[in-house]
Amino acid sequence: MITHQVRVHPEADRLPAAGQLAWKIAEVAADPVAVAPAVAEMIINRIIDNAAVAVAAINRHPVAAARAQALAHPRAAGATVFGCPADIRVHAEWAAWANGTAVRELDYHDTFLAAEYSHPGDNIPPLLAVAQQCGRSGADLLRGIATGYEIQVDLVRAICLHKHKIDHVAHLGPSAAAGIGTLLGLDVPTIYQSVQQALHVTTATRQSRKGEISSWKAFAPSHAGKLAVEAVDRAMRGEGAPSPIYEGEDSVIAWMLDGKDALYHVPLPAPGEAKRAILDTYTKEHSAEYQSQALIDLAFRMRAKVKNWDDVADILIETSHHTHFVIGTGANDPQKFDPDASRETLDHSIMYIVAVALQDGTWHHVRSYAPERARRADTVALWRKIRTVEDKRWTARYHADDPAVKAFGGRIIIRMTDGSEIADELAVANAHSLGATPWQRPDYIRKFETLTHGLLDAAEVRRFLDLVQRLPALTAAELAGLTVALPADHLERGRTGLFDWRA
Image (cartoon, rainbow, N blue to C red; front, side, top):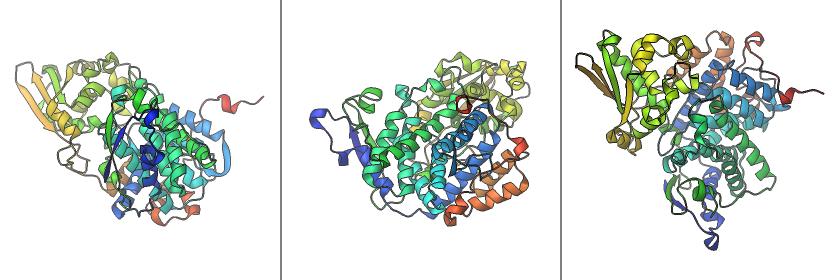
C-alpha cells in the first residue's frame, strides 16, 4: 500500500491532476490486477448476503416505492430488479436505485468502521446493474466489485465525515464510480472525472440518521449509487467535473470537512497490488446497527444470570466514542427511548437493542422491532434504565490498525437493586472473522435461506445459489439472470407517483 498525503491547495498553488486523490483513485481502478481467490470467494458471499436482505425487505414501503419508480423506466436489455423476473429490465441507474434501497432497508448487510462508517456492500447494486446493461461477464463484475470495496474502505480508513455531519455515502459515490470504471475498462482520465463528479453530487448532511430517522436512510446509498452511474455516463461523454474536488480551495475538504489546514493520509494499493480490502469488512448476524452486534451476543451470554428484570437497578454500557455518541445516550436523542419510534430509530438505539436482547435471548429482523415488542411495559422499564459512557480503551481499540486489537464491542455492567453487579465484555461479534464463530459460505447461505423462506420458491433459491457460486465463470448472458424473482402474487406494488402519470 502507498499512503498519499491529501491537503488543500489554493488556486495560486494549483495541484496538477496527477497529484490529486481522485486521479490516484482512478489509477487504482484502471490497474488490471487479478482478483485474488479469497477476494472472489468473499465477493460471492456478499452478493448472497445482499440478495438475502433485499428479499427480506422486498415488500416494505420504501423498497416497493423504489421498485415502482424503477419499473417506470423500462429498457430492453437493461438491468434486472430484485423481486421481478429476469426478463423485466430497466435503465441501469434505476435498477441501482431500486436494488440499493432493497439491500439497505433492513440495515442488515456488511460494514466497515474506521475513521468513518460504511456499508461497502452498497457498491454491489450499481455495479451489477451496469454489468448487466453493458453485457459484461462475471469476471468483469468481480474486478469492479473488488475496486468498489477497495476504494470505499481506503477512504473510510482515512477521512472522517460524520465529525462534520456529512453522511457516509460521500465515500460511496467515488467508490462506486471507480468500480464502474474498472468494470467497463475505462481509462484513468475518464474514471478521474467520474470520481470527482460522484463526490460532488453525493455530499449530504447526517440529518438522515438523526432524530426521527425516516426511510431516506435506505434511499441515501441507492441515491449515491444512482448518481455514480450517471456521473460515469457523463464522463464517458467527455464531460468534466469540479476539480480538484478533494484538494481545491473551495473543495469538499476545505469547506465541508477539516478545512484548509487539514492533512489526511489515504492508503491505496500500489501499482500491481491486488485489491484485498473486502477481506477487512464484516457482515451482520443480527439485523441491527453493526456497533450493536457484539453487544447483542454479549447480552445473550449474560441474560441467564438475571432471574428477575424488576430487580435490575440500572445497566451501564462502557463502549467506544462512536457507539456512545451515535447509537448511545451520548447522542442526546430522546427518540432513542421512544416506544413509538420508527424501526430505523430503534435500530440506532443500543439501549433498546440491549434491553430486548437481554430479555429475549434472540434477535429477529421483524419481531424484535414490532411495535408491540417495543411498547411492552417491562421492556420500556428496562430500556430506560440503560445508559452508555465512552471508555477511552474501547475508543482506542475501535481505531486500532491491528486487526487483532480492533474492536467494536464493549462492557455491560448490570447493577441489581441489592447492590450486586453482573459484568462481562465482548470485543467483536461472534460472526466476525476474529469472533467465536467466524462466518463462512454456509453461514451466508443459511442467512439467505432463512430470510427468503416463504418468499422465494425452493427452485428459485437453488437457481440463484447455483448461479452466484459460479460467478467467475459466468458469461454476460448468464450474468443477466443474477437476480431473484418472487412469485407474481407475492410482490406488492408501490403507490402511484409522478413517473406513472398519464395525461
